[in-house]
Image (cartoon, rainbow, N blue to C red; front, side, top):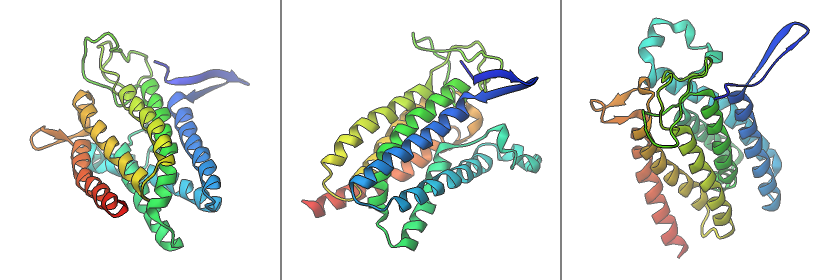
Amino acid sequence: MKPFLFNFYIFGQHIRIPTYGFLLATAFSTGYLLTLKRAIKENISTKHIENFFLIAVLSSIFGARLFHVLFEEFSYYSRHPEKVFALWEGGYTFYGALLSSFFFMWLYTRWQKLSFLEMMDLCCPGGALGLFIGRLGCFFAGCCWGSPSSLPWAVAFNAPESLSSSGNVRVHPTQVYEALIGLVLFFYLTWRFKNRKYVGQIFLQTITFYSLGRFGIEFFRGDEYRGYLFNGLISYSQFVSLAILPFTISGMYRFSKKSS
């Protein structure tokens, strides 16, 4: 693994650029630029896209941290409350980022009298490619690792700076599994947008397909500290996936009936 993309000295100072941070910044930038390009083509004000992605960045950090603190390691943070704001030490949850950004984006569309579904349709293809890039960052950092595996593509996160606690044990590269979901979604959504049958179709299909994929990947995750429900039956992320699906599936059914 490669937790640090660049590692060098300048004027006697040791400079290290985390691969995860670099790729995460690349993910947001790529998603933003692709959405901006699509908005121009659809004659939608770029000002709203700029605001949307600023909201996404800030609310994602807030939501990802909040979900991690409350649901994954609450016992630790209740004993060490000063660590809640130690953002540089890591500890973020993708679903927390996703749900938080959706909420604040919805508030923005209400304020600006925009169609939330139209705006999310614009953002989803770029967001899917951002997911692909961001999860590769997770892979290089060693976070979100998988359970032990003997498959040919299993990997060992044994770099000294790796965030994984799996050591020399070969595990499922669950970060790559999720990255591939993002890449497949990007190509599918790019095609689907050209053949969109109703406003909201891109957004609803994105969340549906991602939730299904994430639910399955969770069975191969090995970072068990994240917490489970119902005596270890499902993880918090699987619970969120299941909670989301009835809304997205019913939404797709209702809108498709109206458009037919």
